Image 1 (cartoon, one colour):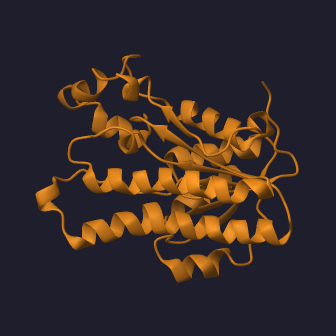
Image 2 (image 1 turned 90 degrees about the horizontal axis):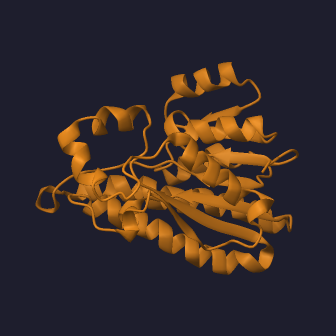
Length: 244
């Protein structure tokens, strides 16, 4: 099934590395004009050196006003991937206010702000659009010491459903994907330790963690017209974790 985004303009947040970077690259290779945001200017510049057509914007999306300023003059965006986010593994009694504020500022508040800015332009131009939010299996099943992270991703799922309802009449679709552990560079470092990985792996019927391309493929499908009747969906990419 070939997917083309020729003539489409896409914004990918958290695109300096990992899943976001891979999504930005694949969208470019499928013909989209891509804007990539991230907090690491060097990583974004490396991305642009490899794919010169990609427009880069370094911004901390947890800062509401800085995000508005950075994205204000981007022009029309047809496709949005809200990938930027931060994880946290920490026992509930050890949490402090700064932990909660930091995770929610990026994972929830930043995502809402970017979506709001893109949607305002789409509505003003009466244009259709497609949005995919990157959530997590942590929003669908309890994970030990993931309370704040899980809560933030639960908010992403709820926001996805509510915004899909609101924006559907304007032909703007909103979906999210909920990956398990994905073998990014960081994922391989953390989850290669057998005793750490074993606890999670035994709950995955397919018996392995996910690869980056498996998330990218699902995101591109949901962005594309191939999924034109799908909105408000939270799609697990988890090898069956939440069914076990």
